[in-house]
Image (cartoon, rainbow, N blue to C red; front, side, top):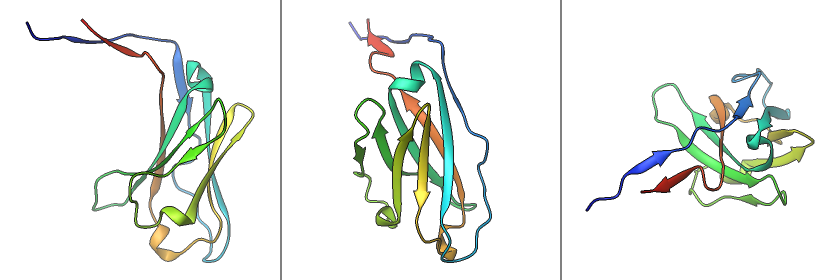
Length: 117
């Protein structure tokens, strides 16, 4: 018998005010992602989306302990950092380069949000 994966609906949401911000080369930029419900205390992933490319995972942060993990071999991974700020999670680019031109998205994963049946 094959397993069936069931997605459990939960009260969780991420609110992202800005997908695209304009900065000059060399300036700092912060993208903010606000977690509500269970997304406020879970894992948050940050993705980069360039116009002609697919989504690229940059990093994720454990909201419980603030640790950041970069395990996706993103070509610019050293340019990015993430931090918990209260109910917000921020993606930071310390010194913007032209090659950072993109839209940035956050998403969350809640432990136990799907199960095998």
